[in-house]
Length: 127
Image 1 (cartoon, rainbow, N blue to C red):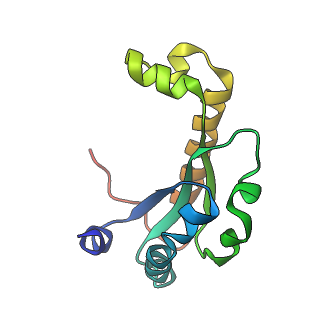
Image 2: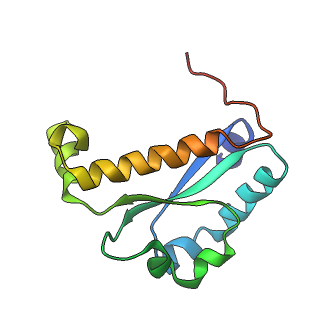
C-alpha cells in the first residue's frame, strides 16, 4: 500500500526516530523513496520526530545518517509543550512556548524549501 501511495504523491515527509536503530530500521524504505526522487517523480525528506533537544541530530543518529540519500530535517524535539498542547486542544503557538514554536517554524521553512526544489512543478493544490 505504501508504494501505491508514493506512486501518486508529489511530496513525502517521512518521520523517523533519530537513533541509529530508528534510522537503520527504515533504510530500505528510504532507498526506494530516494530512487523515485532521482527519477524526478517525487520530492521527499526524512523528518526527525521526538529528537533529544540537548543533543545534535548527527550525534543521535551516529554514522547511519551517511547512508541516507534524502534530505534530513531536524524536525520536532521532545518538549512537554507538544504533549500539553495536544492534551489541551491548543497549539504550541497558543501556549507561547518559544522553543517549541521555533521547532515548528524551522520545520515549516524546511518543507517550504523542499517544495521550491528546481525542476519540478508545484504540487497540486488541495483547494
